[in-house]
Length: 248
Image (cartoon, rainbow, N blue to C red; front, top):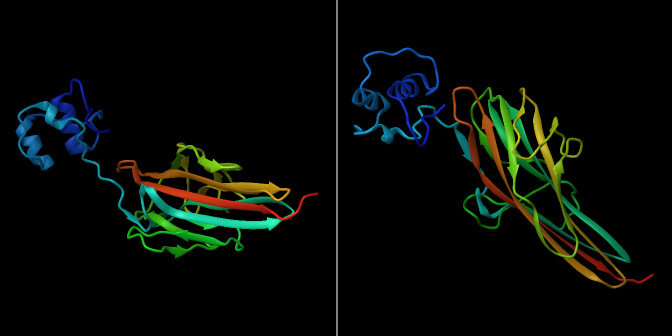
């Protein structure tokens, strides 16, 4: 546990955080000085306890990002259009977080190989890379023995006629557990959590409707001896265009 970010803090607690990695631990220490403790922590010599607010000796889990993680530009995008007499169109991406020692992956794929367009975008931007029905990594943690994982997503926003869908799923995305928003799931090696995200459009009697949907997802991992660590916030979007060519 890190040093609290405000209020009264103790020198013994600071010493426990610096030496034992747990401000609220039970480690016994004697002959403690603020300057010696700051030197051990690798900090410049502080003049007051408040200089240690929020300090933690625990490091983040090492991560590697393959896709945009700013939550503003698309990390993954899919679109499809269909024309018929009566059209009910659902364009779906599957997002999975998977422990596979020595890594944990955040992955995405398209549900159908028949969509018009599906891309994921590297941090450098550009035209992106083609998505398929095989998962590709958006990011990974490169440390074995993760104990729990979670995905936290924003409310899906949409425009145009139709609907948006996001829910934890296992069968479609080939996962062990349904992902639950902002909820850690304990996982063993080769276990995973997942959800499906769909953009739904419909049309009839010569109508034409476009539906756009988007949200952001943040993936976090937990491991003993490390901070709970996130890899970033990834924007995922979809578009469905439904056109009717008849009226019954």
